[in-house]
Each structure stands twice: as C-alpha cells, then as structure tokens.
Image (tube, rainbow, N blue to C red):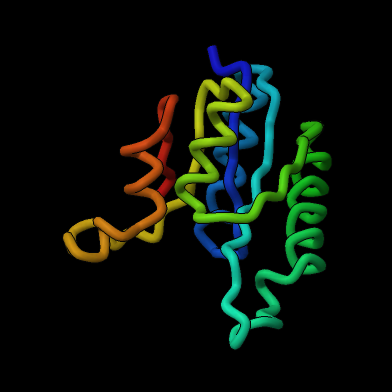
Length: 134
C-alpha cells in the first residue's frame, strides 16, 4: 500500500520517538524509506549554528540510516535547503511518495502556534497522506 515512505527528520526528540513506528510501517508494507533533512537558510549573523552545519546534518542522516539498518531497513537519505514544509512537500511530490510520516511537538490546541508549525503546513500542502506520530 505504501511503496515510498518519506520520513523528514531533524534533531528533535519527536523525530527520534517516531522512528520505531516508521520502522514498523516500512517493514509491514515492504516500503522504500527515504529520510529527509531540511536545512533552513541561515542568516549571516547566525552562521555557525551547530544544528544546521553540513557536518551535523550528515551525522544526523548517517545515524538515522544506521538505526534503520540495524532493523534490516535500507534507507535512502536526502539533504535539502529551504523552508521545511515546502521542501518536504516538494520532495514528496518528486518521489511520488505514498506517505509522509512526521513526529509532532504536540502544541496543537494553541491556534497561533499551530498555524505556524511545519507539521500543519505539511498537512495542508502535502501531495500525499501525512501520518503524524505524537
């Protein structure tokens, strides 16, 4: 049913907590798993942010691939730069993904925060179903 599963990851606890469910889903459906890390463009005065450095992103993707490999899942990794919600949806469209799986920070009841969340934007813009793992 889900041939291609896109799993956008960052350094958040929510992404790490979603990993077991992603593995379970990918194994059950024998899906192709694509990991995506989106780096937001950095303002010059904020340069050097350790979470968005190329090395940090490469380490994050490598670690995630290792975690899935230990479970017998061969994951592909993609790194892109841009606004996360738009990039996630663009990549899902490029891959013809059947499902996007995302962790969620759980701030959903506060309208102002919810309207600004990457998760909400992805849900509204996605070319395919989105599974949110709280």
